[in-house]
Image 1: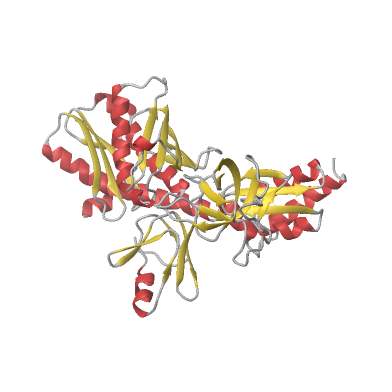
Image 2 (image 1 turned 45 degrees about the horizontal axis):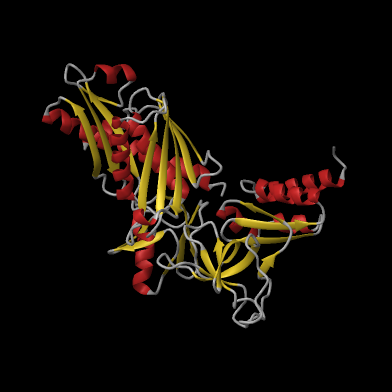
Length: 236
Length: 219
């Protein structure tokens, strides 16, 4: 079936708008779209979106992560193998994290990373044919916010929820950060690490994030206010 | 296709569906067509044994669990049919050296179990976010003793039928991708059933679009 931008699409639909735009100038075809002979076909069920100029993609529901280059992810160290750590990202293959890709690490000065540690890292290689590779430094060799996450609480959620809470227009984190202090790291692989002062606050934060998945912006604000009042002890 | 036009009024069994019913699996769907109900869970792409890995495409595994829980030869045959159907739709080349598992649980069988399972598998695959070439829709038919072709037969009609057909069509050109028939029938009856099912598959595709529209609004 022929579809246009903003429509709900199913695999097998094609969009003539993209092929027409492609004849005039360069078009960036994002996830959920595939070029086949002279048509651009949809491969995933969701909503066809466009960003000017000429970037098209499909917004779809997903729980399983497939690694892509340049995304911040949260992994669990599962093995130390020679000069690399094996890190589980929840994808089909474990990722490799070199011990030299930490800030200030040298051959003699190894970073202190144990099996079972949770790391916040960036994907350097994300390809279907190669194993994913992670780094805990940026291109200047600084760690920034990357590295081992100590203490706190890790939980899983859908990849759409991560995209939703990281969207600058989403009021969830803005509302919550005014209520009580906490630390949060959201990995694009569907994992969230949180750390608050008390266990009560941590649980409240986790429930607020998971509860926000299917709510609208207004409902999120109301829910945050509600949770904050329960936490403060105003409501039994 | 005048036949297609008046078949618009023809009814398939009432379909009800819920996506993402299982919290742990990557994609899941429960579908009822009339009184027949199946539950499907899709997991993947996963890490699998080296002997099953293929360097050019994913390994697709379909497991069929009956209500009784004991697997039998006809069930293995159903697994095979569903596996071949799904394999044609999934873009396996995007997931090399990985495995995808489709687990089917029969909940109620009042005729048309295979077509219900195929449709449910398609919905579960849509929910899992795996790349697919097209969506597919299955329609079942039966030929009764007098030689009339019945679309989506009831349990009683299935029991008394001389022949039973299951057809699966793709959404791009409505091509037949799977045909499964049992019993004794004439060539004309087969052709008639095929065309009836092809027209009726439109209803299933519309149903898919409605379901996806409903859940796209909230994500």
